[in-house]
Image 1 (cartoon, rainbow, N blue to C red):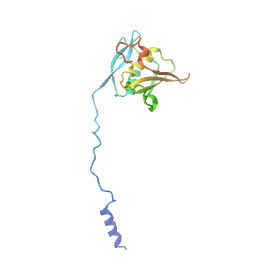
Image 2: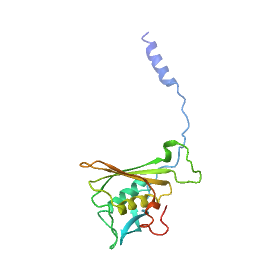
Image 3: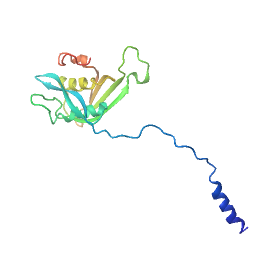
Image 4: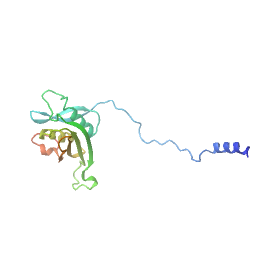
Length: 178
């Protein structure tokens, strides 16, 4: 038996685990880091109306766009332009399909996501501030409606309901998304 044990060990090592090796399968291109800046538009305020402003954003998602808009509340990009989002802090932006998986009723509607933007702050958003958020989000072709939720520590939290930029036609420039 002592002689058979080394022989069995060698035989087990030579036969392997019983799994045949497979060829390497390519599952897509390798990751590439882009150093080119990404620009998008946001809406700022000038003389009480929305004006488009081209800004650099860290990525291509709706969350990146909303975070950039909220950051501009503390750092306006051009003199004469302002924001009415002061005192609010960005918490989250999450997109969800319209109807929560139900079939869309309007087949001509190409936009299919509702963007839920959550902010923290104690004040109410003005109509202009709400227009800034909604119209900026609607610049994305995949967003159909925007809902802004405000989380408060002192007063009850609030929600804007689902909105479109069309509701702010008196504040938005010509050519703004509906």
